[in-house]
Structures are given as C-alpha cells and as structure tokens.
Image (cartoon, rainbow, N blue to C red; front, side, top):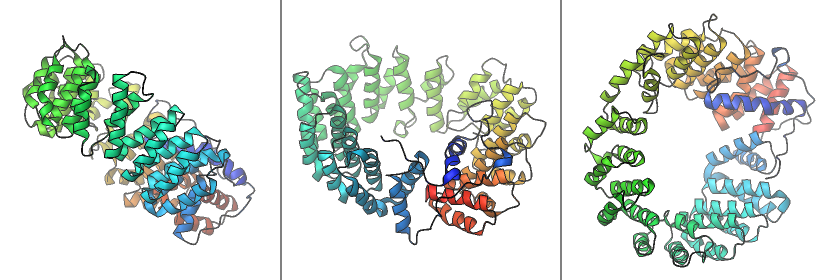
Length: 550
C-alpha cells in the first residue's frame, strides 16, 4: 500500500501524529496497562500549543453529505490516523455512505498508482453494506492490475453477498493467475452461500482429493466449502465424505452436524478411538461434532481420553446451554484437578452454568496473595469469566498494604477488571495519594476508567483539581474518554475544549481524545470551541484536529 500523505496543517498538523498514537493506546487499553513503567510524555507543559503557520482555514461542510465526502476523501489522501477514523465513521454511516464511496472508487479505477486508495475504497464499500455496488467491485476484480486490489474487491463482494454474483466470481477464479486474489475469490464464494458456488467448490475439492495437484486451490476450496450453509450443503459434504481422508472427513461430519444433520453421531464416534486416530486434533473435532449433533452422553465418554486437548474440548463443550446439567460431576472434578488447561475450561463452563461455588477454593488461596501457594494462579482463575470475580475485591484490598510494590501494581490493575462498585473507593484512594509511586497512581486512574461505572466516573471527576504529572493527566482524560457514554464524563470532556481555566496540557489531551471518544458527535463541539477560542495557538490546534478528522 502506498505511504499515506500527511494532512495539511503546518507545524500544528505535524505534531498531531505521534501524540495521537500515544493517546490512542491510552484510550483503548488504559495508560500503563501493559507495563509497570509509565510511558514517557512527548509534550512539554511549557510548549503545549506551539504556534505554527496555518496553510489554510478549515471550512465546515454545510450538510452531512459533505462530511461523508470529507471522510471518503481520506480514503485517498490522509494520515494513518485520519484514515482509521474515516473508515470507522463511514462504517457508522452504513449504506448512506455507499454512493460517495462508489463515486470515489469509480474516479480512480484503472489508476494503478492509486492502488492503496482503491484497496481502502473496496474495504469501505464492503463495510457500507449496500449490495447494489457489487457490479463495480466485480469490474475491479476482473480489470485491476494490482493483485492486492483484486483480493480486496473479492473480499468486499463476499461481505456484501448476493448469489447472483457467483457465476462471475467462478469465471474469475478459473482465470485468476495470482494465488492471493484466487484464495480471496474462493473465500468470497463460500461467504456468498450460493448453491451455484457450492457446486463449483465441490467440483474443485473432488478434483483435489481424487487427483492431488489437479486443483491449485483444493485446500482453499475445502475451507470455503465449510463456510456454506445453503440448501444442498449437507448432501455435498456427504458425497465428498466418501472420498476424504480421515482428518477432512471428520471436519465434514462435524459441519454436517452443525447444519442440523444428527445422523452423523454414530460415524463421529468412530473417530474417538485413540488407537485408530492418534491425532488429538482429529478426536477433538469429533467431540465438537458430537456436541453439535446433541449427542451429549457420547461427548462425556471422551472425558477419559488420554490427550489433554481432547479433555479440554469436552470441558468447553459441556459449558454450552444445550448440554443442560449433564457432566456436572466431571466438570467439578476437573475444576479441582491438577491440569490447568482442563481445569480452567471446566471452571469457565461451570460459571456459564451459574455455578460460582467452584471458585471458593481459589478465593481462599487468594487470602495469602502474593506469596501463598497457588495464590498467583488463583488470581488468574478468578478472571476466567472475563472480569474478575467481585468477591476478590475485599480480599485484595486487605492484602494491598502488606504486598511489595510490584504486587500492589498487580492488585490495582486487577481491581479495574472487576466491574464491582466496591473497587471504586480503593482505586480512588490510590489514584489521589501523592505518597504512592506514579505507576500506581496512573494504573489506579486507568482502572477507574476501565470499570465503566457511574460511581467510578464520579470518583474521577472528584479528582479534577488534582495534578501530578503529564502521564497522570493523560490517564485521567483517557479514563473519561472511555466512559463518554456516561453523561457527566461526556459533559466534562466537552467542557474542557473551551474552558480556558483548564490547564493547557489537560485541554490538549481532551482535544485529542474527544474525536476518538465521540466520533461524528465531536464535530460540532470542536468547531464551536475553535470559533470561540481567543488564543491563536489554541485555535490553530483545534483547526488542525478538524482538518485531520473532518
């Protein structure tokens, strides 16, 4: 892909890129969430808004269509950050943006030097979801000279769907000379879910199986076959099954089961024999197929398999709603067993069944964190449901003061994953304590932002008059940004755009965060803030942000 062209904006525009990348990471993951050492600030407080020469003044579009066109233009010319933002906004607009994207693509079709823009337009058109432009994409698939453009066009066609495009895709698949685009076409055929595509894919797979090497993309065709669910797919897989080697045959049987063919259960049982089928992967796929077929008693029989991978599959499948209460004793036994992989999956399945008693032994072990036997492992187990069990909050709070600093940091980070109101006062106390190491304070602020609770936002706003370091400031504003759907947080972010009593560094971070947090809704507040700003250097900075994103 071609190198993106930087946005206009003079000196102001040039400094937005590196700063944006730092803040984007902070916004998505929380400052200091991945390292014990806080990141280095890149902007000095004495030079927050350097005054650069503006090359032009941003003129606001008069209608939403003009705003959409501005984002479409970013598909052709823009920085990496503005391109990412534009793609997200166009996806938000959906079919309302499709016509503008199509016009851009038509205007650059055939210009090989703009292949990067063509790739961007194909991806955006697919995300817009309007299938009336499949014909344009088919033309690009056939005529584009650059292989990556043909690949992206095929991917967009698969995303948009429409069985009527299957014959054209098949014709192109037969003549496509490049491996990358050819594979993209095969996948698109699978995604189209058309009987016509199914017939072609069956033909390719059969040629590959009977005469290895006869089809250059036999394996790709097989993977595309497994995407199909249209009428006739079960029968196609059954016909192919008679010719497939064992590892592929079990895939075919499992797919048939997933499509509702429960008659395959008996044949799948034959693949559970470890002597006949020594591959744990094959036996695991058979277990998954039996689960799809509703043969839960047969799934449970595989609990005695000698391979941990197969037992892990059993533990995972038993967590599905269709399993009912079957296998509860086996899951409980595994949940207290020595094999961490099987144990963790068993606990996850029990939690999906609503059984929280399985975590009791790990809560006990956590009381000796961090040096007690199994206490570190217990902390991991208590997060298996996706967020840390809230019962861990008082235990970790009680252990905090007696822990070495590095483990205090672990506790603070974990508290931010609990989604528990009880964690708010603990994190708030650490975040505002000037006697704590900066890494702890920053992690605590980030943790408050990760909780996603109104009470956590209130705690953040209570710290508004605190000021420690630029890293802490970045974490504080970023935490508000991650909670922009909570009204007080949103209002504070917007207020900081224009409030000249707010410290410059904090205002600058807010100006960068607001587009990321609010998307299209950031446009008017940024415009109002620029037009009402009395300081030339701040107005120039806001102008550069508007140019970059809107």
